[in-house]
Image (spheres, rainbow, N blue to C red):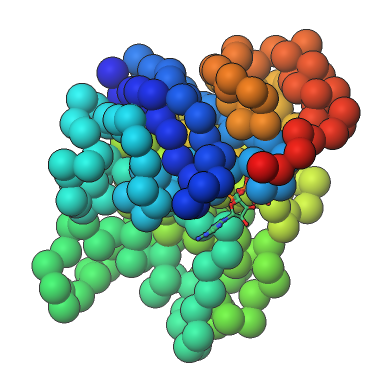
Length: 241
Ligand SMILES: Nc1ncnc2c1ncn2[C@@H]1O[C@H](COP(=O)(O)OP(=O)(O)OP(=O)(O)O)[C@@H](O)[C@H]1O
């Protein structure tokens, strides 16, 4: 199994956001994690990173994450946060190449082959024109795409993406969802993607996990299931306890 979520309960103090969630992912796939603001989507990702206390079990490739201190270093997990900032000037290619950190020892420099890989990934995202730019001067959407390029270079088996298309224009939203699909099918990656962009989902293959539902389960993505979940979310949210 790539991922097993067993009776997961997570939240903050008295406030339980995830109640008894269980599902298994046997093969590489794309999972869109949807739900109202505050439903617990990011909290679910925090559990994978051991950043929130939880009951139950989270296993990746058969290993219990509570017993695995270095899932990122082992290339099992990568995480793209909703907001990620850099407080100093840095060239785009210098930031992207850092995605290869697992291949490097401390203070070992990145070489020409590493920079070539970074350039190829930026080209894949149609960002070659920004390669020498100072990252801090880019637009929000451009920055989001650069972080995605860095994450692609990490080459992890399971990738947790928190609203990767949030700031993107309609063209790039499509491009990124298509790229994530290719990544699953060609590179055998598993992608868990928090998103509010339900309009982009019907053409994708994979699953939906609607954390606003009382008992969320994996639902195959079809135009009908996306529409039903959209209607569910539009109908309003349960009162917060
Ligand atoms: N450290 C914390 N302590 C207490 N409450 C928290 C903490 N972090 C988040 N919360 C609360 O938990 C709820 C769920 O937060 P979470 O970030 O998981 O929501 P989300 O589904 O990702 O929402 P969005 O779609 O707005 O990003 C929110 O109401 C939030 O205020």
